[in-house]
Length: 125
Image (cartoon, rainbow, N blue to C red):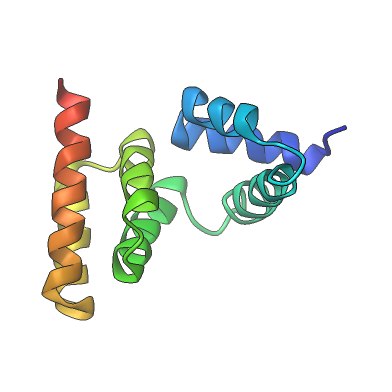
């Protein structure tokens, strides 16, 4: 049984990350991991992403900077795709990683650029 928060979060999660990725994540969940999927979908994707204070585009740019600074390449790759889905331009993504380079260090920024370039190149194919 799913809650209204789960359903609302699921819509947002699919809009940002894509139906295929989200449906695969849920299909691969088992009794052990499903509570985590529910937490992420309700808490992150509804309670936070659906708040009115920031646009999804702005939230995407913030996520890019934070995930890059934290050195989370798998999530960063996923959220570069999400940022593109949310209307971020390649130039805006570039600016995010330049900002990261100055405030979090060149190695962090370099990793961001490398990952973003891979994702952007895949999208253009």
